[in-house]
Image (cartoon, rainbow, N blue to C red; front, side, top):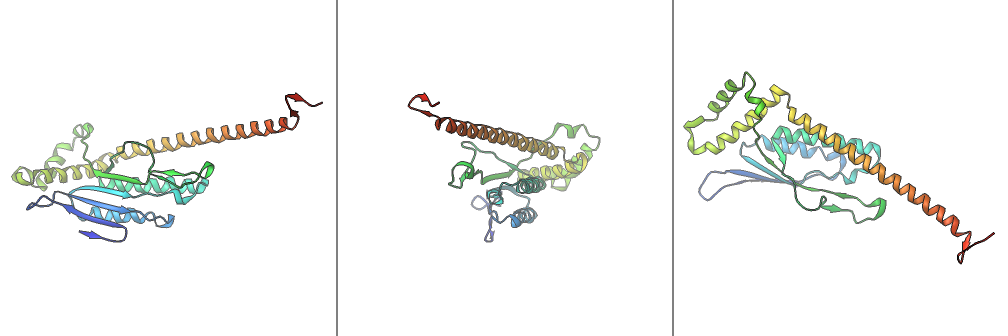
Length: 230
């Protein structure tokens, strides 16, 4: 086990057996200028072991960055950096159930901020059918399987299959320029665009309501007891 003030990294094993997977808990830096340090830590930890990996904690906290256009631009850039790091480490968001957010700043109205701080990621190998259509797939697969022990190491079959999956993921990045990452990038940009449009609609509606309240207030000064004053 290794640890620091911002992370704990440990291996999990059954009694008397070799480690089968690892868990890393991370508390991301709240300062905006330190946020990419989480990516550096993940990349370093990824190089330490080829075990199945579960990562969880407060990895990304952007609520301290403000809501200006510059802050939102920096947030998108940081999200891109985090996404690239997760892709390089073979980590996928496990998702969640329940309410969308896990943190609230306790404010109301325009100052209210909610954010999903706690996230869990895990190594998940997904075989892509398009790989088998590539001319170099069979040669690549044979080479990878032989390098991790192949069928001669039945006792470590699960571990070897995991290493094989990670090697295929790297081959996918080199051969197909990691098309899955580009798709996720487009999906993320679409989500931001959709959210931005929703916020514009909300702000426009709020402005419309404020104008209505102001107009009603003006009429109230000219109306008393159910009769207009002339």
